[in-house]
Length: 177
Image 1 (cartoon, rainbow, N blue to C red):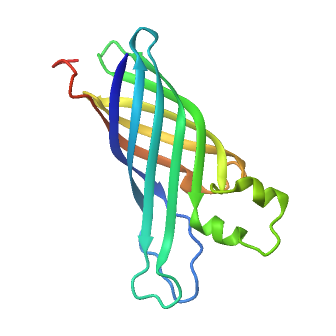
Image 2 (image 1 turned 60 degrees about the horizontal axis):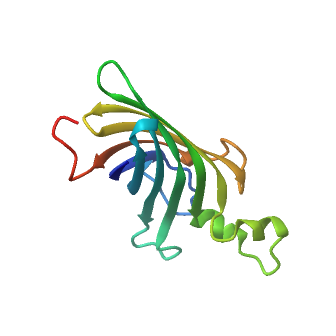
């Protein structure tokens, strides 16, 4: 078994409702991410625990100080396929939980419905799917999406799909491996 730290960032299209007088000049957000990977070497399978954070301040606005805040959590398994080139192709599947302040504020009502109560701390719950390719040793470019089961319809929000660059850190890794 190998334990790797995973560090990187992902970019995603921003899909935020603007309030009157607001402008949004950024077409995408960048969210730093951290994770832990428990790799079972002889099975080429890992258990991954990953989290990323995105925050957009709204400096000078009298209406809202924070324009957007999204936290994403992924817990799942990944299959690591070694290619003839010596690089890995990885496929991931697991649970995905997203806290999105925009959705959270819409759900705050004096009498929340049973559906809203199911969302609790996370406003979007579903399956996370990812595919990544090792472009440099221990460094992957990853495409990830969340397929919501609760809180949103599938592909309703483009912010749930991202592309990222992640490095697998292991201080005990042998050179060249």
